[in-house]
Image (cartoon, rainbow, N blue to C red; front, top):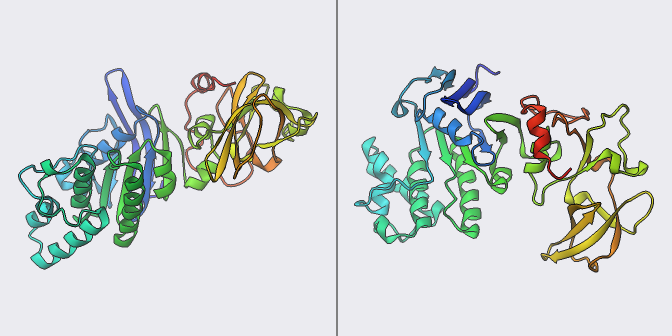
Length: 371
């Protein structure tokens, strides 16, 4: 672990009696990085954020921010700002006053406050709302005020706990890009919590994928998508998710070239890498259930030996319901895992962090209900 990192978590763990929220997390974050904590509900991502903020005290481990140990330091002394899912606005103050509140407390000059306010209003689409009170705003607008108030504070570390969850899809995409642009312009270090993989893939320099309090994988969005370190990582990222086939189900032409594969070996293929063609001995037989034309792509739903599979094809493709087809894929597009351990089997190519921090093999095997 890098000792010159801007933010360091060493063996950070949190327990409440018998319940374990986080299991000895080690993480180094460089100044100016945009880190996304990603995972399903209850995986430990918000717990991690609260430990960094000082809203929870760790059961084990230590924490440094900018070379200061802050493990037991109160939140106000950690030099960070935070955006919660709740708005935390002052109801008696206007939008402009809410946004500038922290700057006034810090006695920032009026001209500088006005400049930051104008930029924050533009970024969050709140121009024209300066004089309104929170009660006059929609839920999405209130969250944008909370976001604007945080980013103008210009703290070097900003923690965000699903700040876009109250926004509609179109606005969420726009504000997401604005957050990323502002973060890069100001050089802020951002730790961002979400369960939305689209947000994670679109914003992160690196993703920390958590599952039941344990790191499944740490890496760039490209690393996690193109080379998932575990069955969980492979199945969590991607929509539709990766499809898994037991090696014993595959024809010889689609069987991995690796020798001495365990009986529990499974092949994973992304929907966009599944090739649909005529049924043939060198292909996996399947039957079309139905299809969805979505404009830029078509999703084809298939039944393969009792397994539900989704293939993604570019543009428009026409298949009849109950039509027999054959599935194939290129060797370089398949991922190989051991169902018993949940770990990736093929070891060629670059490897991202966290690939040895999976849950035990019994838990991993139980998650793969599709096999």
